[in-house]
Length: 220
Ligand code: MG
Image (cartoon, rainbow, N blue to C red):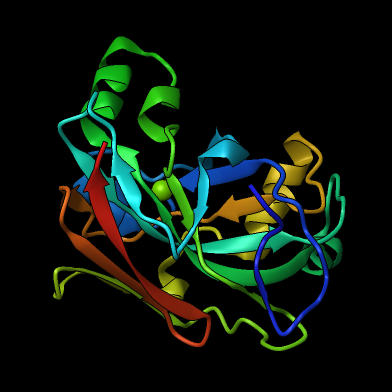
């Protein structure tokens, strides 16, 4: 993995930990058959899973059901612990659009057995990010549209104001549990419409004013 890619900035950020929030859109919680919680669900991916959007997503042979999850991704620009509203906002250096690729069959198996989701969420190419828009260039409104299509068919279509926990609330919560460090990425959860992709599929994602890209799924 190389430095993260930024729009209009020469700053260097080496990707640290990737923290992902689950169950952050009520309609997605519903489609997964879960319940809305009073706190974000949190899991990790290693930085070695991360690719940029000019690569391809490799479908692991140990899963029969890989799903797409389009998400707003935050770049943490400074170390922060026990953030309040102000320091949480200040810790966010920029935003991008990303994909939290998920092996749904393995996730159901893990849930059934009461095991961690690790193997459902962690595999090579499981986290995709695009170039990061720095906050100096764009202030997030929190109402931007977020969408995903597969082979030109629209599957996920929502607005960031449907997030149960917004960016600042997520950073506050996470930093109350562990230090967030410069270069960490935070995936903020996906709206409803998640679904299966297979090798040969073309995924297109977009967050209004933040970024867009297309990426292909290929065989292992
Ligand atoms: Mg997700």
